[in-house]
Figure 1: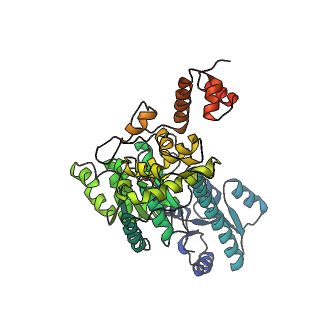
Figure 2 (figure 1 turned 180 degrees about the vertical axis):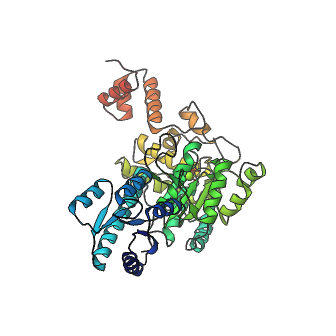
Figure 3 (figure 1 turned 120 degrees about the vertical axis):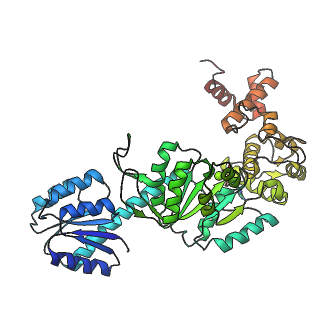
Length: 466
Ligand SMILES: Nc1ncnc2c1ncn2[C@@H]1O[C@H](COP(=O)(O)OP(=O)(O)OP(=O)(O)O)[C@@H](O)[C@H]1O
Ligand SMILES: [Mg+2]
């Protein structure tokens, strides 16, 4: 345990006794004999626990507790009381104390109650983290491939993972930057601790600071409780800053400070908290160019770019396409309960000659569509084409925009955002209906779904009345 504990008690014997017992547990101890000074210290530094005397010379312990709770709902507080009546303890607990310790107490009682309170706090933090993780529902890290560019990356990662060095991952969209960041974390000595990722492109700039550093209640309109930031959530682990090029200069300055000093303070608070995180950042933009254009701070760039890894595009590792295609085919087959599908050599050939502007993600999505629409066990050229790839389109020599090939079969109104599966399904069904001249029974037969399912889908999309 290296928790920081503040002991606020006017009795020097109690302070000494507690300090001795708790520093033997490995805790960092601060002491004070007045309520006023306790408030000052709490405002200036971050503590993990407060041992608070109920009767202090300047402020009544209960009043002090009320003031503390107004500022910080999460700080664990244990009340010490010489007037160990149930009434005092009940009142303290009602006002938000986590536990109480009646004087006189044995060292063992102190150890017990401190441990119990700190564990509860840790569980609370872990729960927060687990909830975040559940939201993401991220699976295992398996990086598929054995082509020379990928082997080079494995080699780099093996050497850098065990260090605490900051890593900057660059590469085109869909090349596996996010996956690689997680993989580095898994191979590091931090793997038992959280991997917390922040997508810098989706956050509103005004809320970004609080997302990273947390905030205290009342820091701004809408901040109606204390919030732990990602830096603290990632404690002991890795903080992944995805799409780092998207943050503004003001926040870049704050981030630089946090990365350099390994200290943060929550928005609206003066308190400084030490953080122990490894930073991995990723971007698909050219950060050096952003620096030249004055859009990215040079000092932050150098801070992040201690070790740089560039993920290869899929067209630079065509050898991996059969392996990856098979991997994603199996993955989707399992998801849609359509096991036993296999790719023909011609289908693989087609995929190897395609340019893959959306890289591995595009291949993954293509395989998912293939599984959804496949009519037989063997996946051939037509099935791949039906899923959006066309022979000759997007081939290596001709520069093609990410969506153009897909648009050939399924049009997206906005070429920059990929279609959702539901949208693809809808467009495919409408196309088949068109082919059958609006004959639903025939369309359902071709689609291998029953007529009722087809009807309910059309109804959902507003093509069918009643
Ligand atoms: N080598 C690989 N083996 C298995 N799956 C991979 C591999 N590379 C990428 N993927 C998968 O491809 C998808 C895209 O990868 P990821 O999100 O990591 O890419 P990215 O480079 O972060 O993309 P973007 O810049 O768009 O965020 C993910 O589902 C990922 O699991
Ligand atoms: Mg990503």
